[in-house]
Image (cartoon, rainbow, N blue to C red; front, side, top):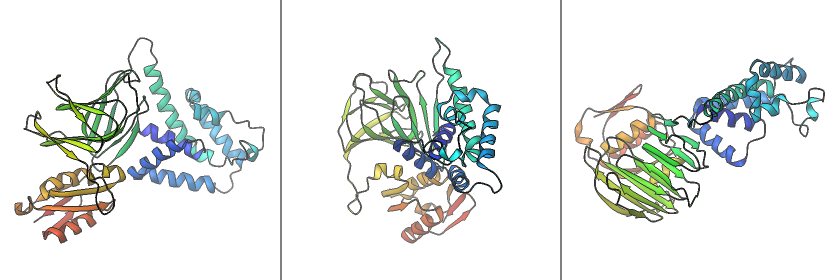
Length: 354
């Protein structure tokens, strides 16, 4: 999720203006971004207990002063609602006696979000010019959620980059994916949603699916949870692989990244808790089944933003399974140590295995 989007959602939440969907989106952002979580906690404390010696009238004056310093952002709905509060009314009678003492604490947050959004709106409002290309990223160690202009929601796994086609809109819904993302696509029969990966593309009408296509990896896959989707191979416009609900297609490729072959596989939920392995990461749960330690180490590096060094190569092909619900790297390595019998040492952001 873009930072300005997160700030705006947090401001709306503090104002009591966030919808149920916006609260869900914010909760995902708070879970994925510890800094944003700390900001939300501090502001919530200030909302409940304002600094001593500051009256509600003084807090409102602080907000108004901040707004006056950045006049253009007053065109932003959230900020405009705050700036248009009638100061001649008793603060605790405004908007159904909603307390305003949080406003001073949240004002700079709202101004930052509003200012950035206003600047972006000015860039795309030039008549006859297409909107600039938008890039969404989730760095190593992070997972993010975003909402696209057509209403589609998507979750980005660690180490993922998405580039929206220039002029992405309700009429043109195309993007390029490097990494892994889960899509909840807004249904539109007349405008298919197209995901390019370089090796293949997925065309969907309205569906939820997971696509994994990290550059440099020998396998890629598309998993359909529900709806309709079709996969086409890069360089072969006549190819069409229909994908059925609860099914995935796995591609195996050469170093060039061109698919050599593919196989269909049914989605098999875990028998113990019903977990779907392919989408478990969207719940901040790391799940793997019969995976080599070599392959798992690549996922762990992205998941925790660490570097894993095998000082003894004999463990690379060990096959293991496991489920780790939002656990620190220290706990994960300890569990793997017990399962595989290797020794390990964590030094800052590097894990040595021998």
